[in-house]
Image 1 (cartoon, helix red, strand yellow):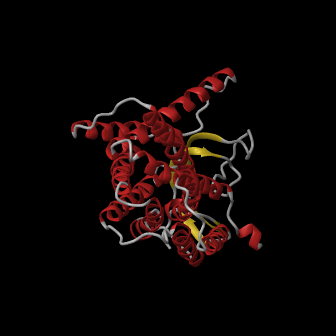
Image 2 (spheres, rainbow, N blue to C red):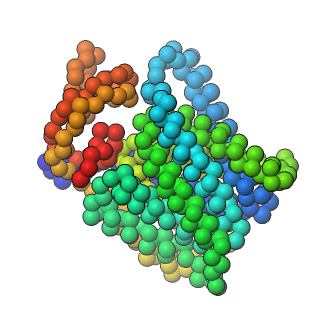
Image 3 (cartoon, one colour):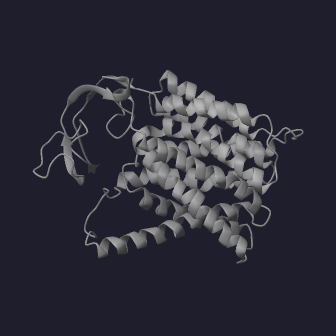
Length: 361
């Protein structure tokens, strides 16, 4: 097999970078909004924005599909009772605890420091994925994580900062750990509809956080800041979450999280405009390390002989991917959804820890 053939497909990498870029933008916008909205309420508004924005998108898609006569097609398998266990854990850890900790931390931390600490989400996700869920990490993946973390340090370092107040950073670190848990739990349902998952997560998480803020006596008055918070939630959290789940399905939690080290770069650029920050010398090495990290993970070729046990499940698939080898009259390249059985199989090819490759190493 040639080196080019051994390399893995680029589309999930693009999904992960889009997700990281949108989420990176959320930090400076959140810093702006914490001056006007209570942090707990702001966390709730972000996730209600996820629910509102993606629900509107879903309705529009349904209308278009009905006009095209495709409303009976089901591109994703429905969520099962087992899936809701994973989704509940992800919603509490990543939809409620993480954003509340982040918003509280932002009130006591500079935007630059907060962006720097966002790199710890990749670290937390990596350790949980590798140690608890047994994902494989090759040497290039580890080098990419180190390189992109160094890039985040350079790109978000605030040369003018004085003594560091630990209260804010500790809260942000707690948020990153909670999102690390969320990422690994969501990986188990990443082959289901990402828009549906995000809508459910947004409604439940947003409602819980708003309820907590009201219990604490927080007054939420309708104004333009509320609308801005909902918009940031819909774009920077909602769309980011959908692309993140799409990347998770193929890349696995660890490798998807590596690309989230790209997020602080976008946050740093946005901060230059929002907070009138000047570009320092750290920008040059930061960009270099970022490019090195991206190239390392894109060019990773994980190839070895591996076995598949007999498996029965439901998901959208074609029959030209080396795993769905049962025949259908409509051809191998038709994408469809139904219950199917994978017979025991042993072969070798490049792969990520996707739905069919969550074996031990």
